[in-house]
Image 1 (cartoon, rainbow, N blue to C red):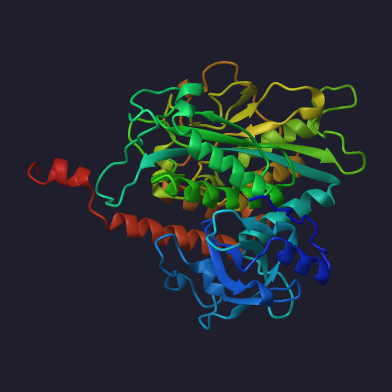
Image 2: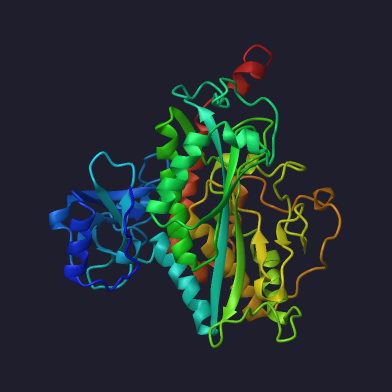
Length: 459
């Protein structure tokens, strides 16, 4: 299916109506990204959808954990109103796209949420990111990002008690060894990958390239650079796209940070740079092409504050299994030039493309919150003129572990950060931290196979 996707949020009503007619759209998915980056919303007939229309959703959309539980019992009434008021959701037509896998011609559009008085809902992840981007605009700077996201293909797994396994490829066999960058290994899933490219093209998702990663049946998609909100939208839509395409081939695609033992985890790396608003030049580079103080301050902010923001880069119990020494994931926030053992890598580039790669985030993150937190740390570095430590030229895996060791430590670090809380929003931080506490408690109540294996008859 080929469709002309509108990129104009100011589309006139008659233009929108014509677009729906031209693409034979029967229904529209009106969606909102929740705290986990999951799509919540409603279906509506296309004939009832309009740019001026509103959708009402309860505020509890943003206080529902990944376990499906509401966390209002974890918060006092000054933070979450027990009346569960309605929010007003309005479509952002710049995100209007055809849903390529729908049985009936379907479109989807991301909505922004507002209070009845017209003010933005402060805890909506998309709004949190917009606030951070606006801080940079106040400095005359424009953030530019480019994500890379990894995921595993696995056999259908309908019983969570069983470990995940690589799927069967077109050869009739499954991968048993690691094959990073292998073209033959990618070809095992050629028809699935063709669907991914077709679906992404239909939705105007700016995929740059695809490669086989280090894990068995682990793939990576790289995206072109652009505006942080737009790229977070694309990551939000991409996860759903990849999972949908996989199920059509009778396999699963998972963005868990560490889905399989003894295999590398899956990351969502963010390449970040800043442009000068007045002339569009790279603010990390001086007029002579040299590194600017601002470049170093940005790194200094990431080094100083990103550990406190780990909860947005590693949001689940499983996320911390990925931070394993020598397995392609950072264990500290050292920085270095073209060094993949560090948490903050400066890739090889010319002056105009100078950037910093944050390698901390897992593939399981809410993309809006992961990039918002990363940019917030950089902003604190710039405004505080924080100098980074010396660049690491050797193996950063030999250095001490500097990140929170688990979900509880990450929650405490965020709550104790007097620098990050005002930027991200105190109410938002309280709700997010309470949500993660609820999820951790739910995990803690489950007795694992390890406990039955080693403790049942031995203690």
